[in-house]
Structure formats: structure tokens, C-alpha cells
Image (cartoon, rainbow, N blue to C red; front, side, top):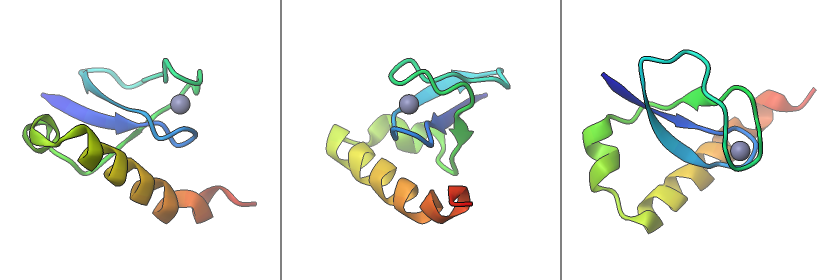
Length: 67
Ligand SMILES: [Zn+2]
């Protein structure tokens, strides 16, 4: 089963199958985060929709990392 992961640092998204540790190839973040998005949905999204999704995801989760 393919899952969609997002990089909490730069918002880059990728699809991953059967891996627990997923690194970001854009910024080098070691652990990307799975998002609640099915591969089917992701596959049909336009690049603009993906960018919007990543942006709002980052906005929502920004508070998590502030310490
Ligand atoms: Zn990244």
C-alpha cells in the first residue's frame, strides 16, 4: 500500500510504499510525516492542488514544532 508523506520542513510531498523512514530529497529532512491522503486522491491532484495542500498542512502543523 502506498502512502503519501510530507516534509515538515519544506512541504515537499512524495509517495512511499512500505517504508517507515522516509527522508526528504529536497532539504535533507530525515523523517517525513505521513498525511491523511490516499494515493488515489494524490494521484489525481494537480500540482497547484498539491502545493495548496502542502501549504495548509504546514500552516496547521506549524504550532507543533514551536518549543
Ligand atoms: Zn524537505
